[in-house]
Image (cartoon, helix red, strand yellow):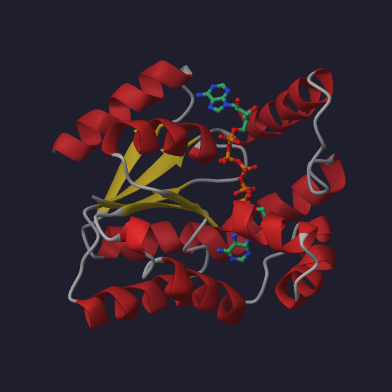
Length: 193
Ligand code: AP5
């Protein structure tokens, strides 16, 4: 199963990816997690990405295409993967198509979690509160100012990715406003269509 999960910041991509990992025994390839690990390890990519991510902007396409190009070739992704946070621009979507074509592979599904913008800020704030309550590190971009920039980037650069896949007849939309279990069930239903 080769799957792309699309949706705005806080839509539930990470939450649903974790459930799909358990169900299909394929890895979650979260570009946000990979970049945060690079920032933490102070690699050259991490040093470049850190201020960009803190502002809530997108890291350059070439960096992400390079990261994913390597990652999908790793052994644990041989039977499939869940892309969480990639592609985030039409240029990234085209690069992914080229990568897959080159390997003779194709996506099984592109699922978009559709969530009202008004709910997203609340979800981000909930995540901050939950993280703080368990003594974890708050994400540097989980604050109202960076979140606004993340939403702006989503609207202008990532929403067109849904149109790109819709144009190819590959997009399946799921109501992400429902409770987590109901969203999981809707994804399963979409995957069986
Ligand atoms: P990334 O880490 O991908 O962040 P994001 O897309 O902003 O998404 P989030 O992780 O905030 O949300 P999510 O949709 O995973 O929701 P979650 O399940 O956590 O990217 C971070 C940054 O990295 C970017 O801004 C950019 O700088 C850079 N980057 C990453 N990829 C890139 C790329 N390809 N190109 C360029 N730059 C890139 O849920 C959120 C909260 O809601 C949680 O508290 C959860 O418990 C709750 N929740 C989940 N589902 C529900 C539900 N159904 N009902 C109620 N609450 C729910």
